Image 1 (cartoon, rainbow, N blue to C red):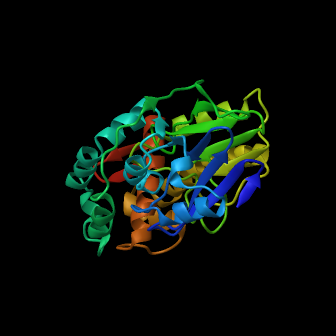
Image 2: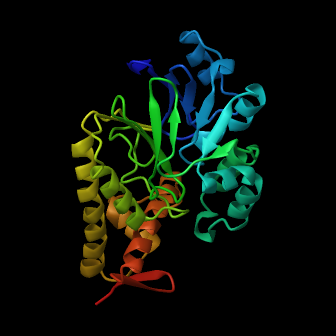
Length: 314
């Protein structure tokens, strides 16, 4: 599917509720922005075929961050496209080079409060354990540029959703490829505590800083192409909404602690969402999002934690 001239969307299924959007840029040189959640990326291969392309036509693969659906097919692609260059940030590169080690560490320290959710541990272990480490070809950082011919991509460091996320700005057509840093708002992105931000590397303070940086760019953004959700055609309003929404989420939690007293993480998840979610997959995801929010409030000295309970800091 052509988005604008020379930029195409290839959408694939993921093991989660939301599909993955991979972008193919067809210029004098070609590139993919992120890959897919398929180990053997047949959806990606078929998507390229509809454009009259094959894997061997890809010159560069750019990785925004290393969450599973963005990199699961990377090892396959590296094997089958030997002349393609994989580029990402230094922190992403380290994670990809040691993927099995980091993955095993996550599962060895899997939070105890989630282990009794039926099927949760096995679901994630079976997803992550087959993924192989990959050596990238070059590391890129803030301000670096990649010329594809008529189009140039500039690297912007946009941590917050996770510690290592980068975005790519194409100045010629004023497009921001935002990965999961900014996602579309629709049923694909079902998470109630926006923005998408987990406790494993997510940081709300850095997220707000990244949003403010993008809002203050001298170059105008006409279009945001996210990895999930609908394409964003009103970038200014979207960024302003996110800058407003994040403090609203903080204030909602503070109000709950003020009016309902000290609460545990599971209690706050259920109060915030208005639903009983214990021992479900959604409870696990919302708990991770809530913990990231609580970590921010702890860092700002707005709340305190005693054992498993959170208190308003008076």
